Image (cartoon, rainbow, N blue to C red; front, side, top):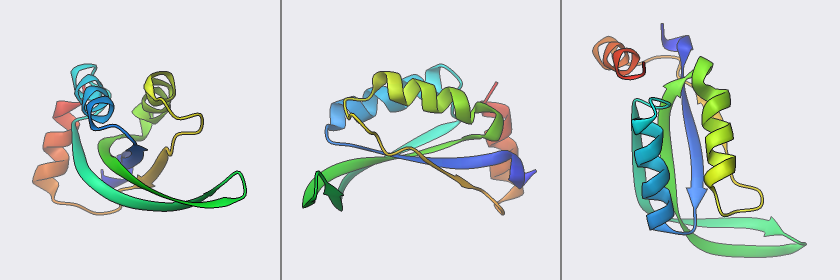
Length: 106
């Protein structure tokens, strides 16, 4: 069962935008749970320059089957030109939690 689930990471510059997306992902049953990490510091290259920004991070728990719809939702509702959308497979986890997650995503 663990191979059916993924964590999707997506960073935002605005906490209100991040929370809005998190709530909608859960409301639309695209994710069973979304954590909003209020502040992370990101270093990255953009237009040939090293950038440092304060961002917030969504940790989205969903299924492989839902990934494409999660990605489409994030692209449609994100203010960045190129939002970070990265899926990481869940290879192990608490059976009770994964059963709950499975039941939370209809």
